[in-house]
Image 1 (cartoon, rainbow, N blue to C red):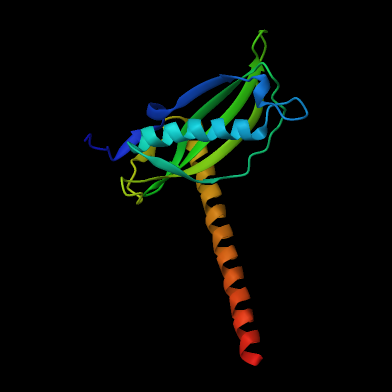
Image 2 (image 1 turned 30 degrees about the vertical axis):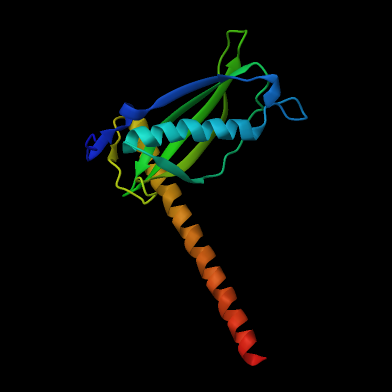
Amino acid sequence: MTSIPASRPTSVTRLSLSHITAQNETNLLGTVHGGVIMTLVDSAAGVVAARHSGGAAVTASMDEMVFLVPVRVGDVVHFRSQVNWTGRSSMEIGVRITADRWDAVGPEVHVASAYLVFVAVDEEGKPRAVPQVVPETDEDRRRLREAEIRRSHRLARRAAIIASREEDQREEDQEGATQ
């Protein structure tokens, strides 16, 4: 088994994936299903997470993904993904999605961006340590800072939801005690 380094530069595990859309991927409006794009986003991010962590990694969450423009049949969709942030066993992977026509030379259009959290797992499905990401450029450092902001928002949202559920449980317990 290959030993996992303590850190890895951002550029080492970056991935670009391109996909030509087909008729069987469309919805009733004639544009490509958002779910098709999301599946490809998850696949591209999963490869980056596995490469960075040196083994299996599973999707833990996907932040909001806003589609800016529709993707049409015949568009070539490009997925560029990289590790933005690492924790002990988790990683945020950013994916930028662009598209251009298969039969024309023209600029790529920004379709969407997505941020996914993956957790590296061992053979038993238990979390395992990941190498820390080393940002190399100003853009990588910006991505790291923004990933830390998204992480703090995810943790705050999770804590608020847990607190709300605990409050609901306390209220239910009090109602049950008074009946």
